[in-house]
Image: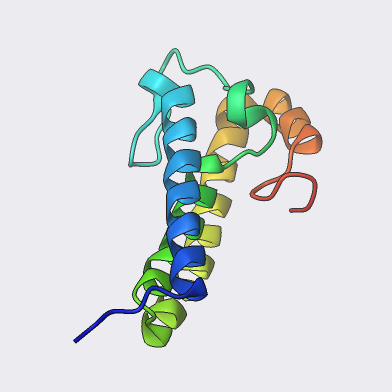
Amino acid sequence: MIYRFGIVNVVGLVLFLIGIVIRSAGKRTLGKYYSSRLRTLPNHRLIKHGIYKHVRHPFYLGVIIHSIGIPMVFSSLYGFLLMLGLIPLILYRIKIEEKMLIEKFGDEYREYVKETKKLIPLVY
């Protein structure tokens, strides 16, 4: 069996790689403040530089992009639909995280929300 690598597969691979880069930039910029759990540290600072200057949740943006790219690489419609189903779950986690950050940083975070978009620079 020969696997043909078409345009959808190439686009999927590009999305996968872009997602990994965005996710890595977010994680690297957070540094010691990064955690897979929702938490803040006692001496936590609000990060507003690097990729966080343009979008509040680059890690989640990267996860969404690379998760959509994976099934495209393998030409899996069912996988693509399954990955799209993750988006509402990620948006729910963002909602919880933003409440936590408002509690921690108050007006500083509210002002940051006014200055940046949630996931897509200049759009959303």
